[in-house]
Length: 535
Image: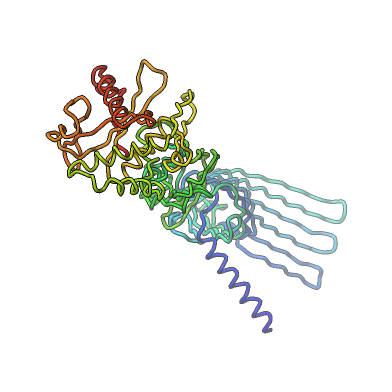
């Protein structure tokens, strides 16, 4: 007895636990079920009776026993189409004596088409879903009467009747898993659309249902647009503030939802990044930006590699619905540069220990000879001379096709190798200047009369325009620029490809290029010469 009670308790606990778990899900799109039950028609009673007597007379009466097979399909968040075929049997068997008997069988079989409406919104997590239902269809009644007297005298009578009718009812669906549940149903049938028709009456049934197909979605991913398909490690700080992609989310629920997107590039992201929950009203669409968390470990890439950005999308509104999508991107090597002058500043490393040590040694050597107001000019001049003394060799840029990346060395690498191209030398000199607090700008030249682009440098002397005579009496040798911090000041152009020459030669060459290309040939006005401040 105790074992039986324990078994019942364990069964009840498992049943309740499974109901709680299933309540976190959403009903699937299709279902097929079977219900058994009783029909109470106007002309019959629901009963099962057996009687007999010593004279071998006996009767069996079964009234209103029936069953239904049904199929449903979702057409809206809370609406389903439901099709069913059922049968209700009334059987009367009478044994009159040893040689005679009679059997009367009446079967009412409806083929019904209707709708079902779930009463609890899908945003409320529950495994118990009451519903309302209604529909129409034909009701076919077939009556068979068999009179059996002696052995060879059988009298069979068959009658049929077809009526059109409708039904209305309610019920409850109990989900026990994502594919299985119980169903309880109560209907009233109006045969011939008359509540008092002989075949009209109540139907009560219960049974099981198997479900399949997609779970109901409360959102749909309309599109994913990759904004940055090529990742350049040197720009990793830029990517931490600029969207890599935009995901378009459509709210398909009948109520507002909140959507959060987690992004991760396994092996390369510092950690998962979340968009934060974005509220989307019913029927509306939202564009959600996707960012990533990158760190300096991205600079360990020595070769280009393909990677996958994984997006985990979660929508919530009582219930929670999740999806995962992925997109392929390309991670380039640490020295790769796509030629975007606005991004060249990301290659500057003024805080690199080797760069700081180099520039500080130069400043220490000339510290006693610095003139007030000319400190930055003098430091820049001596830094250039120190690089020139290292006999760093300039190597011209190769003829790289437009669809190929350029390669930029970091300043420390150019110092150690003793060689570099146009971009490398600009980055080296600019990094050294910035390590001593000297502002720089790139001069980007996209000459329409030449096949290849070129870049050289401007640095800020911090001299006011009326002090320009302290460094040159020729106003064509310098540029007056606005500075957010100090206002207008004197900037000097430097052609860093002349690293093996003197500072004055590099200065003269830079000033001549700026005058001819930027001013006389209207490059600055036409936009093919740009002065770019590093980000």
